[in-house]
Image (cartoon, rainbow, N blue to C red; front, side, top):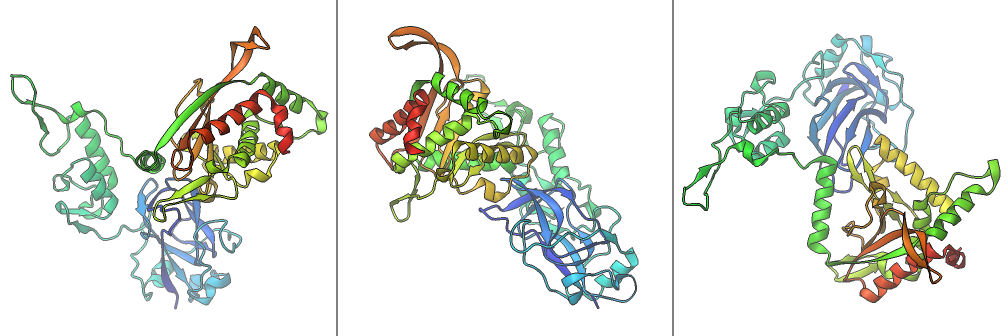
Length: 462
């Protein structure tokens, strides 16, 4: 008889505790192979495909597209092993042997297996497979699969709520779940119900707790304030929530300081034009300004390794890191992400540029992996693409410094004793004052500016 196994949302690493279902890749009744991707989820860091470690027949799915699930919540159930009738011969590979699995949790990690062609098993065979298994499985629903039985909401009374995320969302918006009518099966309160109540409350039409009362400082006495007067409430979750947490932690833990300098980038732009114009049709890809600045950063970090470090608070130690894993800020439709060019210290400008291009395209399409977004030791932030000249960057915790680059624009500049129009850029460095003093930070920034003004200085480090 087949065994029915439950596949739960795995730990996706880097402290991630939840993920949102973006797209199901299989349906109830499909035959899946070991390590075949079954669902696409979006975490606070990236969008990833999750492979199922079991081979067999999908008997149930848990969660609609757009639903957030905590790590450890059921994703789907799979009937593993052969049985008579329709399941016989349909389960291939290791799945036919029983409860054997690969142990994979993400595509690209561990040993892989080719995805099987999607096959469908008749519903009656699924029901038969689900009966004797050790994990109770409900009969498949025609749409997104079964909904787990409601559990009482401990915080709000008798309201039927399954997801702790729904309860948390209600608490964040001061909603009494006992006043909501669930649209799910048996009155189950879904996330969509809570979100509808939040939107209605913002318009002053929701069933909501009593409006807060604010005491006016004037002699007229207290003036009631409606829920809509507080403005629109937008949950801090997903990429935006992760960014908010990281920036807030940086401000809390890191005593940062910022220094900046204007630099004449005319020669750097000329050098870039010469590089991209040489070699004819057999030349490699064009070298970007960001790639050149990244190469300047690696040369500067070789001279000032204090800034390629982190602080171990528990041990009260500064840890200088041997490799430069260079992060660069990239704005996407899902928010700000910081992909990492690994071992940038061993790459030339062309290699760095190619990797930046690959990571930028992955960021645009939402296919960056958690590994692409973690482990950075220094960040380069080109906010000049937004048309601004300067900024005071917030350090990407737990790194020790970030270099910010403004737009490169023609400005009047004294060049060789005469006033001329030159291509000028503002460079700013925010650094952790625990790892070094202003002299080191100023020396780093001055070296970067010197390389921008005189690119030939880089020849010493090539």
